[in-house]
Length: 303
Image 1 (cartoon, rainbow, N blue to C red):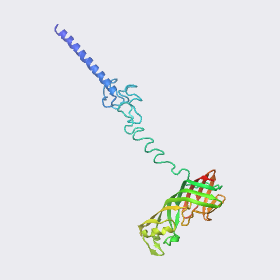
Image 2 (image 1 turned 90 degrees about the vertical axis):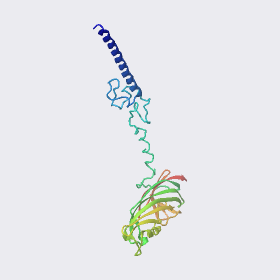
Image 3 (image 1 turned 30 degrees about the horizontal axis):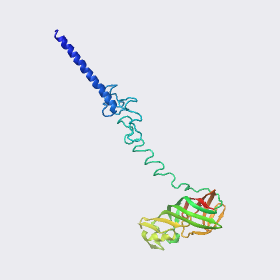
């Protein structure tokens, strides 16, 4: 019995050393978990206080240390992987400023600009008249084509067809001593559909492809496709010099002008509502067949 007492004492000492070693090992693991700050090294289910993660493997700053290894402003980047403490990133690859940027590819003012033709509205602008003398440069335009296209001059089997399109105007125009000089150009596209009943010319049946050249008498040659059962879909590309936004078979690059109240009249035929305000001239072309809606905005460049 006396020999067992020293032996028990020795075992007690060894057990104490073993316990101390294990505790040291646990403390070392705790420091490593906090040092690495990783979501993988910090295991769920470890002791509270040592490896007590906030949210399992998704640590908020290492081993839930406030101000510890997960520094705010340290490894925590805003715009890279945007990690908040170690591998536990907020947003991962879709970080704020990362791949799904606010202001990146889907930016306001980027590819999808608001206000492409700044300054001109497609809605009719107010008219007020004023002095148009001087040279004016077109700064913006918005002209929309709608309504019906008058086909009566072509001798087709129908007298009109629905039309849609838009124009843009560029260049300059000068008004002086009752004369004007028009250096503008008008570009755009018009599309219209011809019903099967339209596919005759003076009583003779025609194919869609044969109709395109006829429209030069009205606007410009058109490309038409379709068949006798469904009708023809036609597209006309507009490229006109002169005419100041009014696309007509007869248009001029110079001639006489007159004003009457808020109406500007070119060569006694082309009419525009207009308004001058300081060095800005707004023009509203008038057209009934087809209907033309919108405005041309110009800036004065000479006296």
